[in-house]
Amino acid sequence: MNNTDSTGNSDRIERGIVIQAPRRRVWRALTTADEFGRWFGVNLEGQAFEAGQAARGPLVYPGYEHIIFDVVVEGIEEMDSFSYRWHPYAVDPSLDYTTEPPTLVRFTLMDAPRNSTSVTVVESGFDRVPSQRRLEAFRMSSRGWEYQLDNLMQHVVARP
Image 1 (cartoon, rainbow, N blue to C red):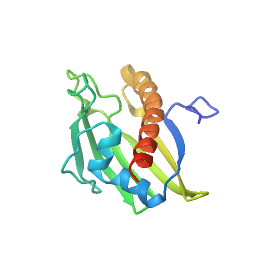
Image 2 (cartoon, one colour):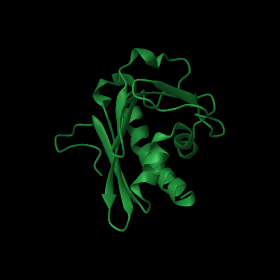
Image 3 (cartoon, one colour):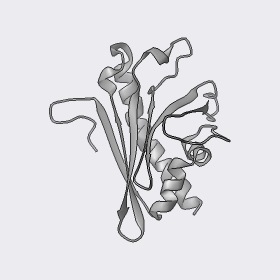
Image 4 (tube, rainbow, N blue to C red):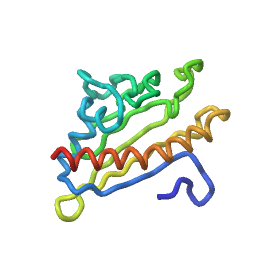
């Protein structure tokens, strides 16, 4: 999918995938914090995703354990969409990202043929990220969502 619209706007990223699994299974992988953490690569053990609540934990990738995944759940619309706000590519421990406006990440599910599920992720709000890090945050999220959707698919298919 395209990173920019026809005017060159780079405020949002949209990626999608079709997963050969029922919608209920994909929904569970997205909205159960511990399971989300397993495919996303973050330790969220013992936490729950609830609208208006924060979830946070360290990444589990070797060499990146110092990076904290920190989100506030925006909304959970049963079996349809799950969204949260976060600070994209917040990897410099010397910066206070809490002063920046977060982007919005929204996963949307739809039924697809043969008991499959279409998953779309949209991350928007990059135009509000401070200019000195906007391009890098956009670039890293753009690549990251392709990777994470593949992780989600592999996780769901391997653990029906």
